[in-house]
Amino acid sequence: MADIAILVNGAAADKVAVLDRGFQYGDGLFETIKVTQGTPEFWARHMARLVFGCSRLGIPEPGKDVLRREAEQLCADGADGVLKIIVTRGQGGRGYNPPEAAQPSRVVALYPLPEYPQTHAREGVRVRDCETTLGDQPRLAGLKHLNRLEQVLARSEWSDPEIAEGIMCDASGAAVEGTMSNLFMVRDGELHTPDLTRCGVAGIIRGAVLEIARNLGYETKVRRIPRTELGEADEIFI
Image 1 (cartoon, rainbow, N blue to C red):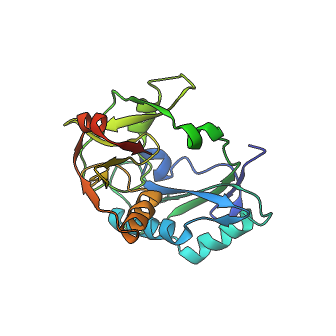
Image 2 (image 1 turned 90 degrees about the vertical axis):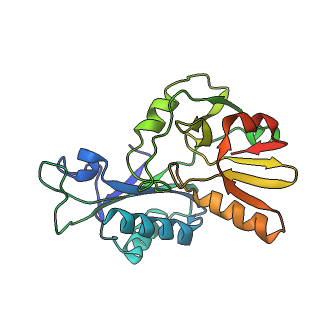
């Protein structure tokens, strides 16, 4: 924990209440933000997704100004890192029924920036197919909610350090995403990415890549992509 700086509801701490619904039920959302020289990247996009997720789940949003101040406090030394923001519905009694007047909890934590080999960008990465599939739940689709057991199970399927990522499909056999990444396919000069209206996480970079591609004049398609089509792609990237 020495290399991690954490604020829980604005105070330095490394514990949350055992009755917090984020701990009890995964009732919350999170954002993971790259920090470059003390500046969180794509801040506006992350906040927009967090606000949208809070609205979808009926969790009062914690306030973007509050989160910004706490992020700036942790990033004040100007270093690189990874900022993780967690917002939960807060504490509640036993049972699934959420409290009528929720008092959200927030955790803002700064982690060291992970080191990825330069060969990943230069030469590409090895990936594998995951046996664990993604459940079909449109009300949660696109959100970066705290229920990540599918990804945990998928990532536990391999330990080979030479494999950088696993591709996850839905129950129908359509490719959806990696365990921690969004998926793109280039075919006949067009950029394709899976439709995420049934399951999957709508990544911040996914949105940025689609926007950049369209601005550059590329045809983009968001659609169902059967896993078998990946073998017919001209390029694949995550």
